[in-house]
Length: 106
Image (tube, rainbow, N blue to C red):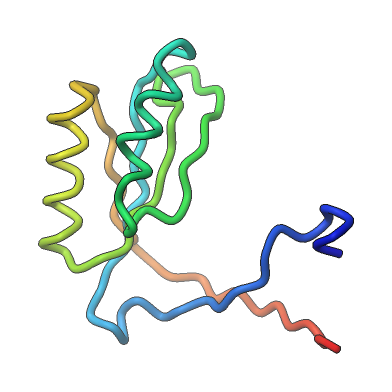
């Protein structure tokens, strides 16, 4: 399925709390012209696992997740704000909903 482009990757779902880490969802207001340059700033952090552009009436259209210690998350968010000069919306994880997907891998 990967060869056919149906599956990008298969990986674990890690319980961040058991590792002493947290996760947040954040969003930036980014023009389409600046999106690639801002994405390069956000993507330079190994703690960022997702970064995507989506339409949003509020203007917050570049969404990304950060998983790290609380202190490291704050460092990363402050650096991204400083480097991009963008308004940022930050939503810490309030409640975890379990994902129960299992695949028989041959």
